[in-house]
Length: 454
Image (cartoon, rainbow, N blue to C red; front, side, top):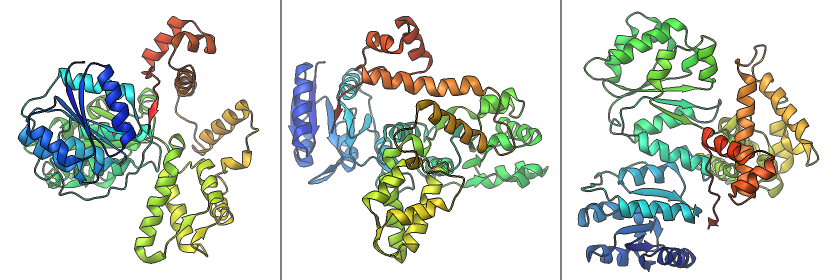
């Protein structure tokens, strides 16, 4: 790399590590703990790329982006932040930051992004005037890598006209994602309408829906559950939207590929809706978010006048080890009930067990201890998967679907354990290295395992 990098972060360790890494890569580095100093450097014409934290002792890094864009159009700014919410990602995107990374970030990843920023410097980038005139909070909370990846995709598709298909299990927050896409998009001042089955069934319903949405956002929930006739009407709506075409969003908790194979989902509708596809992870896939989600919901309850509450360490451990098949919605309901019924400020383990035990079909994973064999664990999860479908069978294609879901994390974890060394990973797995490479490509697995920088 060749260029001058301006680094602004109040953490001395991060400044030191970035300075050393960027200097070794061939860059000149100016590092500071002050936004005032950073802005002075920018105004003096210093720097080819800026790397800035958000929360600084003398201000907010995001609020500096419009000024940087005004003073130095085209200067790439990479935002790093420990405030790992969708709000931060969206604000960074709206202020047209070159890139955004949550803390803790991967150092080699940041170095790659910095190199790209040095090579490609967008011109005449202008920040919107209202970037800071937004709600301070969205009901989407998560610091895990899965949620941060989702936030970045939401920020990228937010102001496009692409239809968006949002997939995830029940209770993961699909509708919240859809509403966030609308509320932070260029269509935010236009209507957000959720299409009902009754409206779609009426012959004049589609026309009335288009008239109501007036170029805003039209959401269709659980698209695969609609009868074929109504799916055909949606295809027609998307093909002939009229003068003020809305943005189409759809949600689904079904496997749409299997639904298409079973004839339950029209292929032409799927292809029209899947301009961009977002996958909302299940809560069990992001257990590190459970504490901050719990704190978030307890804060909401406290604000409603229920009093301050917190989980005891034993209660928090139960929460962390519980399977949460109802996902975030179930967690919120459990926290609300505990917040309203707890006898003291500290919620006890027995109170948590009582609330979770009131749902007999949902077994806390902690009861299994640490002695459960892998085969028994897989069997338990498969039985629960079948049970969730009640008297119906799961969609066809189960064998390949389960293998795919097991194979990807197995390879990812093995790569992590071997430090990204594919030869060692192939030996560990007992497969040919060429086979491993093909699987990495086919499963779209990130092969570089990086040291975490706090």
